[in-house]
Length: 196
Image (cartoon, rainbow, N blue to C red; front, side):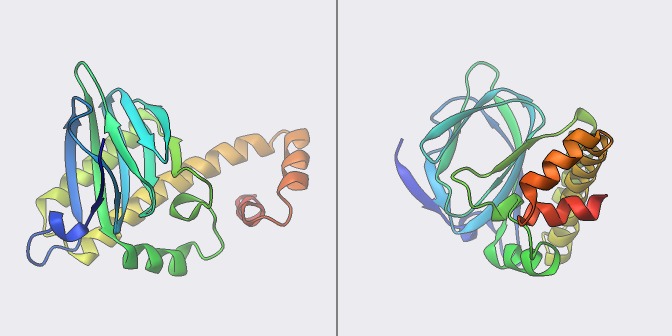
């Protein structure tokens, strides 16, 4: 696989501020190994495949959501019926705005400092909601207001899932005390405190 740098401008028509598409990847030849000058959020609607990212491989299946940072080098492969993903590509400036406005103290999502991009598994219900909202966004002009609205919707779905998961964990005092001891001083500690 050759390595390329994809530019957001390659995917935008006049006056568009972001790119959104549903893509069916059926082989390793569909997409080259690449990084970007933009941020990308994607989720798997159906099928299975492999996400090749930063020199490693991860299996993908329905419900997987990934927030790809501009510096990540990645591609996808699949066989058989392929893998269907919805992806949203948007300017780094929007990412910077969201960080400053909503996630100043977070090391999650696009701002993780680990080797791999943020990834989580969503329920079928949440995937349906995200895909429905993406369908709506595909029908209208790809303006900043549409982009902000879509990203806020996605983050709200993710954060609600985290809050529910954490609140269930905190019902167990042993787990709660362990997490507080292990997370104290980290950015996640602030998130955990705010959830309780």
